[in-house]
Length: 462
Image 1 (cartoon, rainbow, N blue to C red):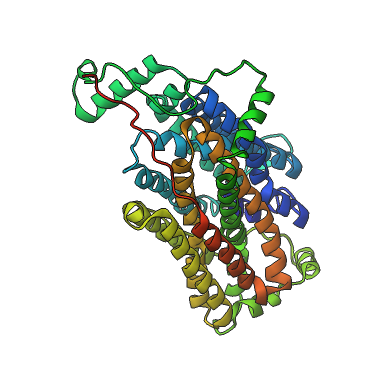
Image 2 (image 1 turned 120 degrees about the vertical axis):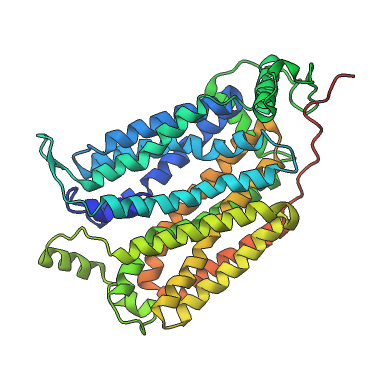
């Protein structure tokens, strides 16, 4: 998502044409998609914590490297690898955190974890607003200058390093250790959790033996190559009894990312176009004045390269991110009462109605508000992740999350391209298409099976 501010700021330095902009907007998603299988497999076979540490550290290093990329296509290449590495953390974190909690608290905690996605959407425009207007140039004697947008790239990647340092002091998921038959390490992790939560001596932990009854723990796995193991684990998700669940959660993620992330990538451009016209022009009429791509290219050539961003874009993004964070917190508080499926249906109905209304009214302020409400559909991703964590057993959970989010990122790539075509060529039908998408998601959610009952992970010795 950081590219939504980097692209307009770097358009002159990197000499970005429309093709390069489009590729840069989606390249990180492609990196995530291409690595999802690998990270899901490693999370289930090598541990959640190890994958998170490696993913975040390499994600920071590639962000640092991309900040000094001299050309557009080298920048795009490095951003692909940034998405490749960050993809591990974005999927595995839900399984890692969820496995520290029981069935009562897990939906709440996983939803609250998703709040940090929204906080990132607050931090991103805030950092951009502070850094991009800075007027400085540092000559690196490499044929280009280090400007404010390059500093922003580093700042956006820095949290990965900071959180990796914090994660280093946390234990591995005990449930994951059990699925890997590391019972002694699992007991040590539980003792550490006990000491942290109660302040007591770890050795006073009242559990001396762990009993785990989940299917699959006692199965003997052959030592196979990594590629064959990935294939075998993936096939398991597409066989009975998981086939229907896998297809449904993948469809939910694909449709949700396609509508919310697809529109969000074009949100700054929509706002910029609306801001250039009076408040009594509807959205599609404002976009129609800039609908010709050829005209845009000609205007840039005639007027000179412009890399400025309207302040209204920062302001609106901050507001939407703040509201989204509040929505995630509310979801975390009510999900166990209302239920994940009911929340999904409710959000899809409300956001669809607001999106269609945005096309029919003539007030630019109301249009911004209604589009902002529509973008709240992105909060459904956290709810879907909660559903996935509950639907699958431990030894398949990491791969299930990775594959479902891979489908979601494919939806983001497709949605970004299709949304661009819709708003400039078929604007009057844009939110009707999104409404149809949400109708399919509502039906899918209604048919989604209930999570299975899980046995207790540990029992005290008598």
